[in-house]
View 1 (cartoon, rainbow, N blue to C red):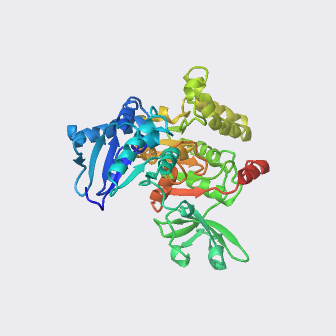
View 2: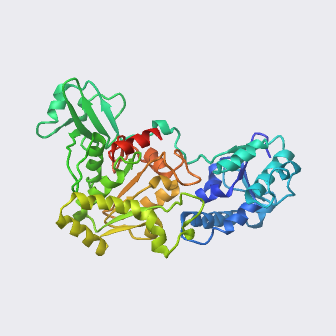
View 3: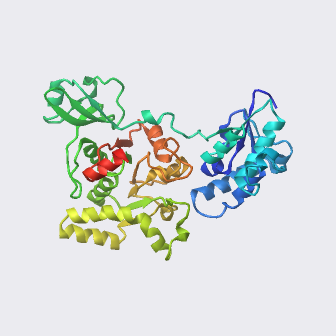
Length: 440
């Protein structure tokens, strides 16, 4: 093996995150501890994303190699390195004094550690999405890194969907208040190029206006503050959010922001306002337990187990009931009864035909990039997909602000004419909720 090459040992969670990870390491070699294959065997059955990745990875591995995996490995492809499987070794004495040999993570760590000791001229790196395992590896002198292929490069520069422009010509702003409430985009001189569907707060010392950039027409158009199903936007970002949520030409929308900024409520209100244009409104969220116990520990049948996870969506529906008259309240109940409005865990939505739907995915920051891709790639004719979430409030054990599917979507979709993103900044739930979000 050439000294310039690196050798990467993969943890199971990397494969469950991205079944195509074998192709992401360029010319470098990959080694799979046998314990990883053993763990994958436990994940093959099921309909969740991790089950798909386990099955797909094993198929890829089998198509590449057969029995050659245990005899020096096999080349992954042109200009790629080799992949091999390493069998168990007796736990190194230095490790056995500190780590339990029976634990799967420690078995993986042991194989990588022994390989690094036996090949001191080769740069050996353990790749894991488990921060605790990475720390253990570094504690014994083994290089360890997160799997960064689908991570956002810099979360601090992530596209926000709107910007404020100061000292804008007063005549341009005045134009937005007169028919046809628009002007040529070339008349505006932003510091950086405008992005399709980017929203703008235009200001000068005397006046201001809300607008957005329509790339198809190359124009800046005024954005009006309009209500949606009894919900009136309370700030510029909420006004922008309703503008894209109720625009049927924008097929994909993402809303980010801390708790209380109105992401889910605005999405649901807009969906109900535009309901006549869609066959059904679907609201879903991933089920990610907030502790180390899954829903199997909760009492009751499957519907009772899932109820706590769906309650936030029902709470938002309750707000809409409060702000509307009796006729609209009855209409919401009728929508629920006739399944024109469906609230369900995301797992229950998988496999459905997403045609002419208004599909809201809440807490999308708890999805992997692959899961987000799977959802969007299933969109049929006439479907609009809205993903909401707080990229700084993640419950998934192997995701963070840079690696979650919502951040990945924002970075990759920026600039597409069918896509719009708005980051909501000001909390509108209450002064207390805003204070807690800022300080706690």
